[in-house]
Length: 261
Image 1 (tube, rainbow, N blue to C red):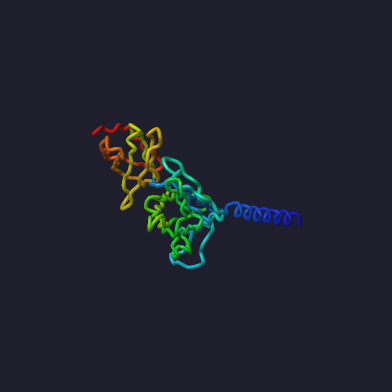
Image 2 (cartoon, rainbow, N blue to C red):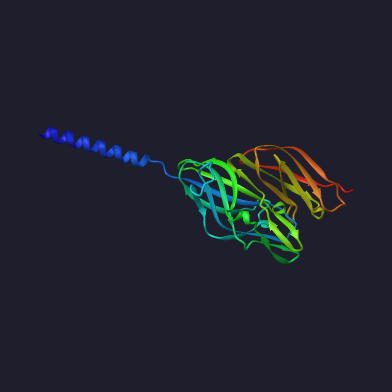
């Protein structure tokens, strides 16, 4: 009888130990984190009001399957989000699975400031269901996945009439794990240079800060050609070839001094 009791106790301990191990081994949710950056525009400000950010887990565009990443309305001045500056657009725990789309719900309070005067941005009726961005990615259990959304202010804001501006969003979506940056310094600062390169069919650009420093963000790993175009006609354009970008690293090209015409 004593031996039977000891045997039953041993079996109980084995079973409860296995159950505990199974619970401990259960994978948790993954996490998605979204960053917002910008390419420059010829405006004082471009203020975009984002009411909600969502992701979709199906290739079929249905009303179901959307998960909320951020539903706290916030205003982003796109022109402040360049040369390394960014803003967190949203972060949330998600069920590990494959996702195919993102959606930004933009509010009509969005506006553009031109020569100190604010104009409300016209939001096309077709955008009532949100700005949908196709970008497939997989959330894995207990892992963080980061995406950067590059909102091109210059292409996204269109003058459609006398002092009437329409929002026509142009946004690149890039996975941080496979992308890097290019930085450097352009002198003299009064050259007012535009620094740009291309990613596929997209143009990625920035304006150096008041010290001449610049950083091009969210560039997929590869080799790039930079074009430096001064708006001050006293200086010549310059081209920097074969700039290698390595994922999750910054490629600094040093100081570029533009030649006078």
